[in-house]
Each structure stands twice: as C-alpha cells, then as structure tokens.
Amino acid sequence: MAIVRWWDPTRELSTLQNRMNRVFEETFGTAPFPGEQPVAGTWSPAVDIFETEQEIVLKAEVPGVTKEQVHVEVDGGVLQMRGERKFEKEVKEESYHRVERAYGAFQRAFSLPDSVDPDKVRAEIKDGILEVRLGKREHAKPKQIRVNVN
Image: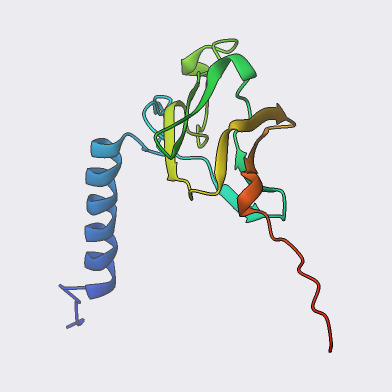
C-alpha cells in the first residue's frame, strides 16, 4: 500500500497567496493577468528637493506629461503640483499584454518655509522632469559678516 500525502502546506500557502493577490488586484485595479484593463487613478511622482544659497529646487519625475497637463501654484505658503497623465489611445486596449505605468491624475503639496518669495517662483518641464525653482527673500539669504581683530 502506497502512502498518499493529503495535505501539502506549500501548495496551500501558494493557493492562499494567489487568492489574496487576486483580491487586491481586483480591488485596486492592478491585475497583471491576461485581459487586464489599463490602470487609471491617482499616482504620485517621485520628488527630490534641495537648497542652494539663492533658492529651493524641487525636481519631480513626470514622464509623458506635457506642460499643458501640469499646474504649479504657490498660495499661502504651500506649493501645489497637479496634473494628469492620460492613457495613450494609439493602440487598442485589448492589444496590450501588460500595463505597469500609472495613468490618471496626480497631486502633491509641500509646505514652504517663510524664506521663499512667492514672486520668485519658476517652473519648467524638460525630458520628463518638472523643475520648480523657489527663490528666497533677500533677508533669508546668508550674509557674510567681516570680523575685525583689535
């Protein structure tokens, strides 16, 4: 008589993982299965922020977004970036095998220090990078003070 294994914990764990993945994928619309639909919704561009003596610089990754699709404003000490990356309709949705890029609206907001002059804000987009330069007020810039020796 042969011994038959009735319960395989590895297979059960794999089955449970597949079921949980399907629940999340169906809920959040990120199913990587055949026949999946393009994901539409919100996404958030990655951002780097650094400071120089003259300004604060913000660089955001927004590939595929044109200057007409992005809006930048400073109001009440808050920098707001909004925009949308639309799904490319040049290929029929049924023809896609996989869609991993996020599409839809995005929005980011950053509190600004008092040193930022709202009249000295510039933004430009180039090669998929949105660069926002926030000029500092004159009093906020470091000033060298000469020390005399007696």
